[in-house]
Amino acid sequence: MTVESSAARKPRRTAAGKAGTTGSKTGTTGDATGATGTKRTTRTTRSTAKKSADPELVQLLTPEGKRVKNAEYDAYVAGITPDELRGLYRDMVLTRRFDAEATALQRQGELGLWASLLGQEAAQIGSGRATREDDYVFPTYREHGVAWCRGVDPTNLLGMFRGVNNGGWDPNSNNFHLYTIVIGSQTLHATGYAMGVAKDGADSAVIAYFGDGASSQGDVAESFTFAAVYNAPVVFFCQNNQWAISEPTEKQSRVPLYQRAQGFGFPGVRVDGNDVLACLAVTKWALERARNGEGPTLVEAFTYRMGAHTTSDDPTRYRGDEERLAWEAKDPILRLRRYLEASNHADEGFFAELESESETLGKRVREAVRAMPDPDHFAIFENAYADGHALVDEERAQFAAYQASFADEGGH
Image (cartoon, rainbow, N blue to C red; front, top):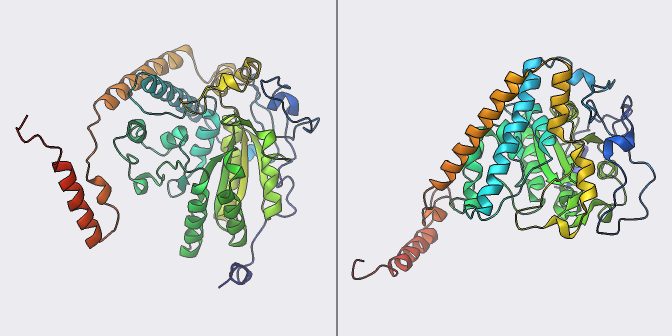
């Protein structure tokens, strides 16, 4: 059966004609240049073909913490309470504290590698809190904030980076898949899972995370094709943090990333990735489309990687300090704090208590990592086949004999 014949039997509901579904949202407020940053001077030569004005992006909180109106997306956060706003702030602060502790542990030799999310907290917490319990999440290896939202214990994220397990949690317990190191492949997994969800008749949705660098992978293009043709209930959430290791986005795409969705036949939208309210609202909208049978959506969260790509990277070799300083002024946590304070939704007691909680989290993470037991050498054979296999049994026996050959015959 061909893809075309299968798709023809199920007409897709689209959002054609809806204002702003291709990314230029009506009602978007805020100056485009101010929302996406000033012109940058870096150590690399940026593309001279860059457009004079950056595309509009959905923004509900300015970098100064001012709430701005948006006719299309205000409804998705209209009922948010002060307690929920404080919860979003708490999520971001604790996620950043955990991330900082993991980076320090890697520098101390406790972890082999770490991929920091510093600067991307709003994109992850906003989108993560938009999901329902029955939705399914396919992350990369940097979605520590999304994992927090899905109830995955932060210490479980560190086992793979310490080399003691292959993941550290049961994906089915939180509908949060294991971290994927292969760039872009999780978008295929998400699309296939979403196609299964649709065939099962469920009204849940799937969300796949990937970075601007992964957008150049063939797997991502294939995912877009299949999701569009099969009308899969999936949201593609791209965290455009400006740098695919040392390669700027301008050298990967002639157009803004969200506009790529148009060529595949589904809507794309660019959101201020440092605005937690905007990320929450836009992701809720996209997930709602998926649940209503309207097919996939591409969300480009325009944000910035404040630190290194991973702890093995040195960003000073390919970008200047001016760029980072410009984005520090748009810090997602500081932005929401300004709004909470201006709205009298949080006092100094709240912030002091949260500071204490963050230190407690850091201590717990340190102790948990250092207490992790060595991996079971035979665990690799346990999940190869659901019902066992004679060849795996033979390989296990051979490996056991190999391990035994290292034993000291003298018993020392």
